[in-house]
Image (cartoon, rainbow, N blue to C red; front, top):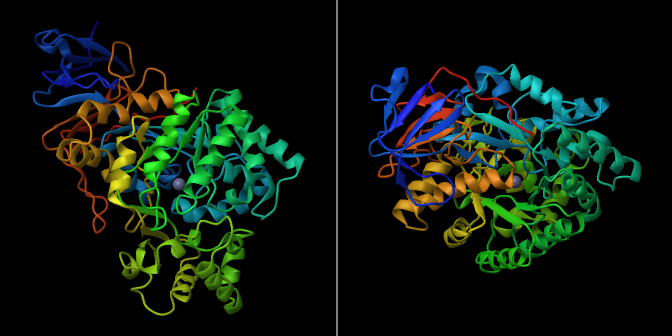
Length: 528
Ligand SMILES: [Zn+2]
């Protein structure tokens, strides 16, 4: 067999969690050929030979939680942002998370969805009526790594009944189920919800059960940003469990956290609960990013009714002093069923990450910007047309470590590729887990860290022949130096590349070579 690439002298972490072992790895076309050490042709037989002495050879990392849906569709504006994941070793990104995807929608709903989705995706982004449209657009936008998408419940809901705060009618729910069924049949990876976000939050448990049942019918998971990750996180987890039980879908909890002072330490309850459910036979997993700060839209700091009707309706309310007073009271007093981030923390824990027209505000907290904080937030949202991303300083280190260490926990960056000062998790997550948490803090051995980033994720999302180094598997690989691998990205410089990621192979081709992004764009949309 002729090889295109021969990687010699490395230690293989095969993605299963098995101990590191010396092996040579060949690439023939887009598949792997596993060889004993020194087992390849002596001169490479025409293959490019990479000396991996001192390096670990692992399956390419699978980032199970991204918001990279549109970044490669933004052209030059998105280029640097789009490069960040592959530079940290990610060969597959799963987007469409937190209830928000670029499809599907009824044609008449597309303009409103487009308008209200801009804040989340960093620009004027397309919305597609179906999965095929999404795939076609991406096929025309070259990318370094592979992408697959979940179907967002919020998108489905807005795509059928708009941004209204009301239950779906039976006919509307049937339409949502049919659109979901089509997308999953065409290759989408599962169903996601974002139950703190509008319009997802307007959907009740029964609505999500009906949709999750469709996912279950395709053997695909229900992936959820819980309705509350703060003081009511345990109740929110139980809602997700109920949805899984009633629908029969596997459950995946996104970016599991217990945030805000009322929830700190609650991972000592949620994680044993997940372990107990697994022991009872419920298929439940989660992902996490290795930081104590979260990131989302500034508009998500406002009560759900403030966003009723979409972005234009929100901006109208923000112009009205009476409505601002109502928002101020809601934040002070809370609203039943609403995860109130500011009420759980304070405006001094919310800093501006991306505000295109006000870069001087980036990196400063709403409290530091001065004035009445609700007025300050409202003026900023108005000036930015609703598009402001924030970072919330809301978690505790012991909770983050506890979630990371869970045997059912995989790694998801939750990267938000937007211009400005996006959360450094976009460019730092995977090397940070390997460097800070595995090597420096000894939270788990390196082969377990790799398993969380590869085999565990491939199993959950049905990515056949990925997440593993073995004969015949897809040739997606990452080579890194276990002694030096670490994250470079910071809050001040969020796109600084990591250290120690030497090469990244996607579909048998070098997407990163000697630490640098190549001109090759071998990535494609994957999905069964
Ligand atoms: Zn989320």
